[in-house]
Structures are given as structure tokens and as C-alpha cells.
Image (cartoon, rainbow, N blue to C red):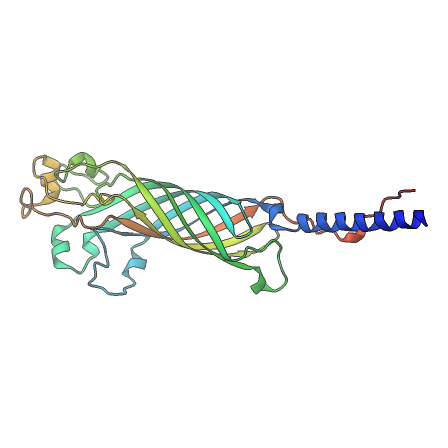
Length: 284
């Protein structure tokens, strides 16, 4: 009788342990770490804006996008919340010549900037991330919203034809086109929406749309008033500009948006062992 009770208790204990191990090995905790890389397009919105309110919901913004490339590391804090560290390179650009507004065409300024953004984001998965690839294609999808904070480097350069002493690629900050200077680093606040689908047990394909706000109004070199004190500024500010006249709108800061596609790889992952692989130890 005692031997039967011991065997029964041992069986219950072993099955409980196996089930706990099985659940743990197949839960989200088995794949907390992942990396990804990808690329896509970005669009700038500032004092130089190709849509400028005259085009309405135009496709011009899509045509005038420039390239971005990103990479990142993600750590799952809970089943729905993740911490994500990102690095993003963007060639940000805009041109008054793309506007339909006559005053902007007369202003005739443009720029490009090779910019880097380093940010920390918190992702919330309102459709939980899948831990295993399912046979039903629609059961492999997950989606999330995110917000974060980071640093953006920028250094606007002339992107047009040579004018006087100014050549394409010259740094506009050094030309002192306005009466105030600015730094080359600013705070950024990315917010957005992401979508992800599992291709294999460890590999996923994702898409992410984000708005990236900044605390600077100088991303495009335009903010306040004309400066005609230096030769480079005179060349680019043209004859119709008067010293101290308004050059840019300084009511809102610059921002840009990105549409990125990426490939992700997660480490670890479920070990789908059946309970039949375990055995009940002998206690006699």
C-alpha cells in the first residue's frame, strides 16, 4: 500500500513538473531577445514642405520621399510590452521647387541632410506576438503601437546648382544664412504603428509607420530671418531678400515620417517536446 501511494505521488509530481517545463519552454519567456534590420522611405515636413497645404492630399509626398535604413534590438519585458533600441539612418531632403506656392518658388531654397537617430522605444502589442508559426496564415500576424525618445543628428547642406561661391554639398550652417545659429543634435520623439508576420519559427517580416517629431526648427536650415552679412548668405538669399526679413516659419518645429520594412530574428524560442519524451523516475 505504501509503495502504491509513493508511486502515485511520484507520478503526480513528475507530470506536474513536466507540464510546467513544457509550458515554460513554449511561452514568450523562451524568446525574449530579437534583432532586426531593414529600410524604406522618409518624408520631411518643415519650412520646406512639398505639400505646403496647396496640394491637399497629394501623392507628391510619396514621389519626393528619400531612403532610410534601420537596425534594432528588442527585449520582451512582458507578453505585450517590449523595450526596443533602434538606430536609423535617413537622407532627409526637401526643395521649394516642388511646391505649387509662388512665394516658396521665389524663395528657392532646398537642402539635404545625412541624419542619424538613436532612440529607445516602448512597444505595446495590442495583437500579441506569436511564439510559433501556425499553419493558418492569418494566425501568424501581430501588431503594436510604440513611442520613444532619442537623439537626432543633422547637418543641412545645399542640394541645388552652384550659386556664386556656394556649391552643391556646402554646409548651410557654416554659411550663416540666418541671424541665429543652431546645434547639429536635437531630441526626437518617434511614435507609430507596426505590423509583423512570422515566416518561420524564428524569422519575421515587419512593416512600421512612424512620425518622428523633433525639438528643432533648423533641420532644413530655415527658422527665422535673413542674414545678408556673409557672402554665402548673400548668394543664397537672393536679391529680393532684405536684411532682417522673414525667411522661415518659426511657430512649429520640424518633423519627418518614415515607412520601414524589416526582417527580424528572435533568439531562443519554444522547444516543442511532447510529454511522451519524459519518463517517471523510479522511486523503489
